[in-house]
Amino acid sequence: MLIWVITALGIFWLALIRQLGAQWTIYEEYNYGWAVPFLCLYLAWQHVHVSDGRSRTKEFSPPSCALYVVLTFCALLYVPTRFFHEANPIWRLTSLLWALEVVGMTLIFLHLIPGTSRVKSSTFKIQYSPLIFPIGFFLVSVPWPSGLETFLVQKLTGLDIFATVGLLSMIGVPALQHGNVIEVATGMVGIDEACSGIRSFQATMMMGLFFGDLYRLQAMYRVATVVIGFGLAFTFNLMRTTLLTWVAAKQSPTAVASWHDPAGVTILLACFVSLWLVCLWLGKKRGYRSQEYARQPVSAIGDKNLEARPPAVVFLRIQAQFITVRRWAIVLLAWFILVELGMELWFRLHENSMLSQPWSVNLVAAGSGLTKGEVPAEISAQFRYDEGFQAAGNDASGNFWQAYYFRWLPSRSLKSRVASQLAKTHGPEKCLPRIGMPMKSDLGVITVSVGKRQFALRQYVFQAGDRDLYVFYGLYEDPTGSSVLANRRQRTTGRLAAALAGSRNIGQRFLEMAVVGPETSEAAQIALREEFKKLLVSP
Image (cartoon, rainbow, N blue to C red; front, side, top):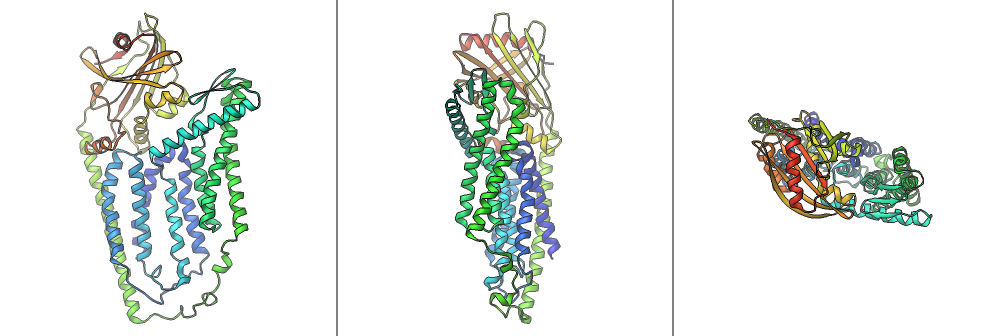
């Protein structure tokens, strides 16, 4: 019976970990997720290890029908969750729902198995109840809702930069804040989200919860470890930001690169060690349940009748329950296979019917005035494209242009699909304000004609110092070509539409052109049309 339960639950867990694993790899702040499954197993082993391991079958009461109802609901909910997640592999909602469904099914099966929870003895709690936390602990590896994460990142980054500027002023280093950039005497220093404290906070929260359960801290002290972890993460990141900015002020902003990663690793380790020492101190201060107590013989705990052989009728009921659980496990396994096959059939049929409409960009075409260059490492890390380049230079009218072109080939792996979907979340309306260029207006979508091909672009105006920066941005999926902007899946309706359209592994292109010099948005559009005729290659 147990082999069927392990197989059914195991295949759900492996599928979930595979999907989340792509996000753990892409998102640096969730790299710690790879350690969470092993930590869950270790906590579960600790709880089983401290028990005496003997079977308790003194009394048996059949499970409630409500458990089967909840199990059925989780299995049915898996269908839309899996379907919509396939087209939106970075959607935080489906990631969370999927994790909750698998965790819920696991806990229900543990409750249904005879000899795990339906024993009317308080001493048996070490058999089932403590496993709730190790299994639920997996949820800390699920990416947070985008709205909450963005809010915290913005607030913590602003607070971090504000405090850094204050500390630098206290030690005699003049500094000014411009959005997420700190200006010092030698130049500008960009403060990315990794220095805001939010990424360390997510990892330290995970470690705080882990240590709290490992040392059997009371609920109040477990909450305290999370709060203390947050304070430690922010404090150490503030030290890191101050150090890097001080290095930039004393040497140059380029010198920060050699200090960035060593300082980050050192401070992260210091944060974790500090949090571990705090949890260890709390465990010793309050005293946690000793393993010796849990290992005492049952008779020493107080119930000497637990070893009594169960009556024949109870034994038959237990056997019947074993058979029921096995049947449910087999049905759940068959359901998983059916859902996966149906989903794969749906997307493959739609992908085979999609035809690409190729086009390309020649940024160094004759007469363009642009010079091709390397894409900055931080931009490459964000977009993870297959092909990409940038160019910058002045046109015949003296306007300064900067252009980016990225290409993603049709996805052949889950990781590449996550990378292409992640690129849809980036855009000038989000990225430029973070580096001190506030958006003044969104002028909507314009259309530029190049030969027989139409190109749709969204036009923005940003404040770059005392001048206006005009940005023309387009993201295009291969089947729809350049005349239709891609579904960036920023809202629920867009994500649902992508799944219903069978959009999963299709290729896409990114084009962004920014210009400084034109006096009005209309003048910028005229300059863009002239430049487009030189740059775009359309069959």
